[in-house]
Image 1: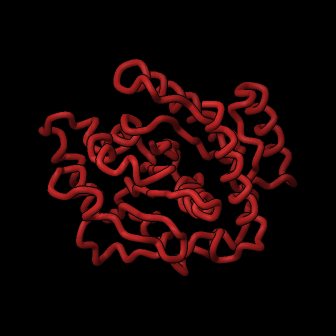
Image 2 (image 1 turned 90 degrees about the vertical axis):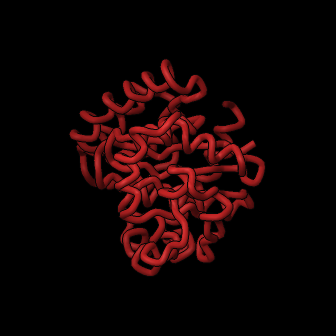
Image 3 (image 1 turned 60 degrees about the vertical axis):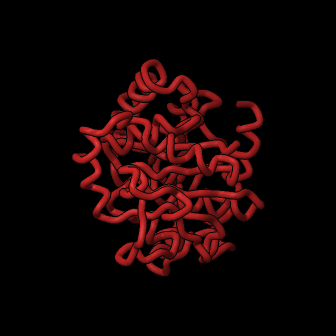
Length: 256
């Protein structure tokens, strides 16, 4: 049975997609079978995995509307070593079209049931908003990973997201839990980063992952080559950190 995790944060530009793509590649590097689901109409995770989003024969859009199943729409990321359920701008239309459909919050969950035995991990890259797409991700998942920068505004949005997770847990998905907070784009030279990091550890305790992802130019360059940073430059500090994070994830799920 696959462990299904959403990578979510209502704030944009905090490294959700970078985390999803590189965690997928890191876990694949550790001999895990991984499916990455791109739930963001921008399709950045699709491109970051080396898949051309302009010429898709099937995508997350068709899967959510029920006109195609996951085996028919998924593609292999050759550079990352994992499978991808890709997306593009069409997915934005699913928000409106799903309003009138039955079981609109659980359509992704139903689709995943068909391929559950084929994977060890399913990672869902959510858009930066609490939308019907994000809700589908949360209803399908066992847990949520929150990547966040150690800055003041990140703390402001965090409480809203934690409250959303609690509401979904109470009303729609009793399996959903907060897996952990991942500190990303971290620069130890900035005093505020160290202060916010300490606040997170004080408030959330062992929910804060020990691994810290440093600010790293090689991770930023990798998507332009259609590769995860873990594959693009395995020797870089960012790539090594994501491999380490993959190992920490494997240890953490043993205690779930």
